[in-house]
Image (tube, rainbow, N blue to C red; front, side):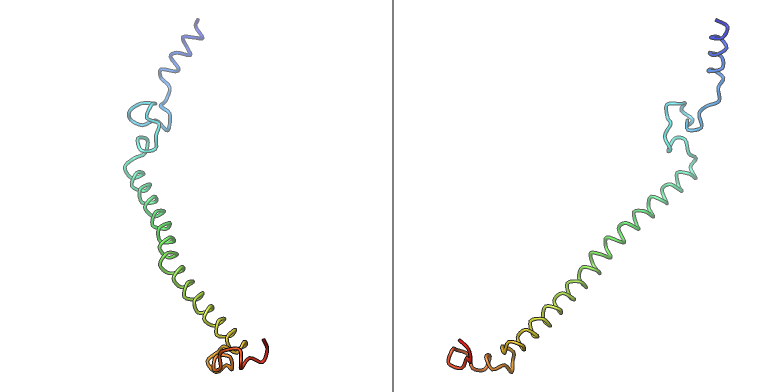
Length: 107
């Protein structure tokens, strides 16, 4: 019984938990436990993380994607022109100047 009493008094006079705020041990959350300075620092860090994520997204959306599309269109145009030249359908090609089967060397 004496041990139980000692335990009860120890529990009553125990130091508050480090995570507990001013509203007792229930409010063991960062916002209640931290000081105003800690809350400001946390908010600044969260804002910075948001900025980092969104800047990456916007750079991809408005820089990387359009430049990639331009590069693909250029590559497509070059490939088409090359194939046209090699097959005779280019601007100076024999098949472009004389269309039809009569001028074809092969069927």
